[in-house]
Length: 316
Image 1 (spheres, rainbow, N blue to C red):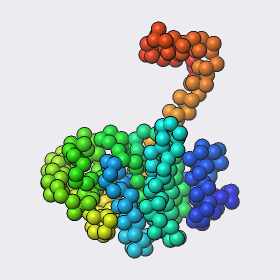
Image 2: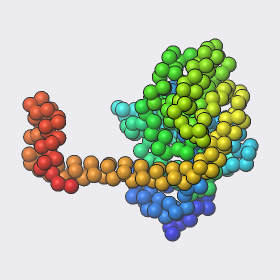
Image 3: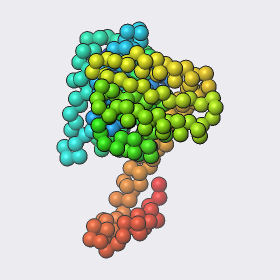
Image 4: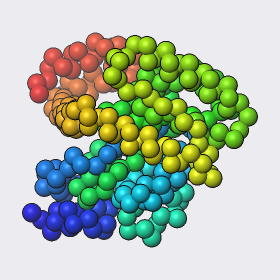
């Protein structure tokens, strides 16, 4: 095993930061590190934190870190920020909001830009979670960018998906019922000291009740909890719910099955990306490709016919 692989398994923060940077930059050294540490993963409880913009997810994550540390757990955090479509840069402000944990050796916070990736996550979020898992962190919190009803890649990554909602964002429940509502394991109604919290709470409780009618008797019933993350109110109950869901998954055998599904999902995503790249590289070697692309650009050929023609002349 390489020196950095040994350092990761020993929990060295500098090694973890370096490995995650390699993976985010698609440096070949990152893939080599993953091959070494992969057999040592599968222990951490992966918790996804998602919800609409303005829900206070970063402040809530900060509160959860404090509660988890009070219970003696090491906590890793992957905070995903949106990247600029023009410069590719990202503000990465989530790390700033969690500065009070900066000197805590039991906490690792890493901000990552989406780099154009849809679905609320960064391209290398899964890889970063593997690194933190191998480093021995008990809980890994993954905070997504503010997402809509169909940007729910976090579901394929996390053991436990937490949906954060707040009153005062308009038609909140309608905004999530077609997507997030069906996949949430724990619902946190943050900023519960605001006006309108009772109405939003009733609407969510009704929709969760209707969702429960379709499930099996022994299925997990998602709790709806109220929080004021800025004051730490409700944090203990939220962590209790995370623990209860993890216990439910282990008792039902889903905990290990999910690890296999995550690995398969990453395999298919990686294969799809590699196949697309290889197809384009081979297609661009053909002299006819440039003319075909020009015809599409000039609206002489529709994109569907052009894609079929390109596939017909290119073999993987």
